[in-house]
Length: 125
Image (cartoon, rainbow, N blue to C red; front, side):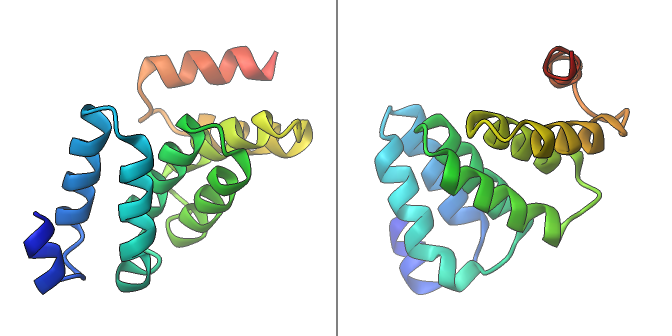
């Protein structure tokens, strides 16, 4: 995967797959570094940005997480997963009213998994 990324850096699936492998091996910083490295080539792809946001959230970097999720919702405003992630990141920054708005946007979809919907309901209480 590393060689493939070097030859075709705009191939989105390869860095995402390699980053997922790093996460599975417990190398979260390595996964984040890889995604930061390929970001100029990938640009504003919402799947890339959402994954970057999820990694930043897991690392406790709520500022980077909310930035990545905000970019993801701008790129794909109808994808409720990114609104959910944005709500979590904003909540982690104690930005309650903004988090609530993001959770309400996420909840407007019935396509979210039950666990996400349950978390949203809990956060909105």
